[in-house]
Amino acid sequence: MQIDDNLPSEVYRYIGSRLRQIRVDRGLTQTGAAAVLGVSPQQYQKYEDASSKISLVHIYTLVEHYGISLDAILPVRETPSPQPAPPADQGDVVSDTDLVARLVTSFVAISDRRLRQSIVEIVEAARYSSR
Image 1 (cartoon, rainbow, N blue to C red):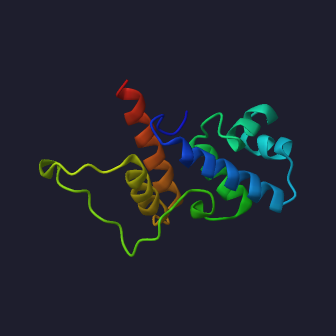
Image 2 (cartoon, one colour):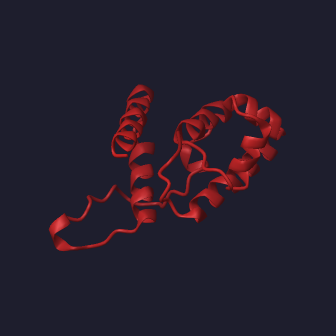
């Protein structure tokens, strides 16, 4: 269960560097962080070096464990308010990075934990049904 395979690799490199920095700042080993996620230390190392893509569920688990906000890990652009998607008939092309930033910004603004979990499950189900 992973985030969209089409996300730019720089997003995963950013996430990996943030995971490493937060872990080190808290004095946790890769083995300790791996135990929080229920993965092997080798798998966790791959998340940090971006050779493997971490799932949103694992990111959320670390956010809860560390007691931090999602924007401490994810590359979120500061925007005054979420912008609506451009109408499809205008032919405007929005980059994957812009779409991810808007999605994450909107997701972070949801305070209800159960609603966020439901959204994750819906997105994952949609992803697997489109294969």
